[in-house]
Amino acid sequence: QVQLVESGGGSVQAGGSLRLSCAASGYTLSRYCMGWFRPSPGNEREVVATIDNGGQAFYADSVKGRFTISRDNAKNILYLQMNTLKPEDTAMYYCAASNVCGSDVVVTRYVRYWGQGTQVTVSS
View 1: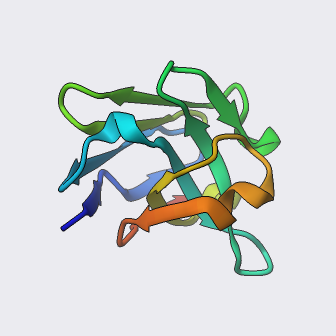
View 2: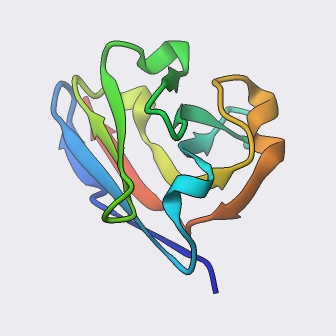
């Protein structure tokens, strides 16, 4: 059974940092593009960042220069380092395994597995 379990969420003040982790079990992380998603204003989940098997990363414009996605295929763990957090980053963050990498909204349609989410709250 495939499982994605996120951790690392919490409450921080604007300008602070958090690191999210996603532990995968039941399959090999390297088989998929991995990513982090959060709800859009319209409530559809949208890409925050994705990373392919070769380590190429893709970011939403809103997080470029502030967030860094990385993966440890040997440990089957995905990370998201979030720096210079803003109140508008407040959301539930979901880890996902996808057949497609990128930052476009279409990537969400190719997600195979979702985690349960971890809440990030940024206060001003």
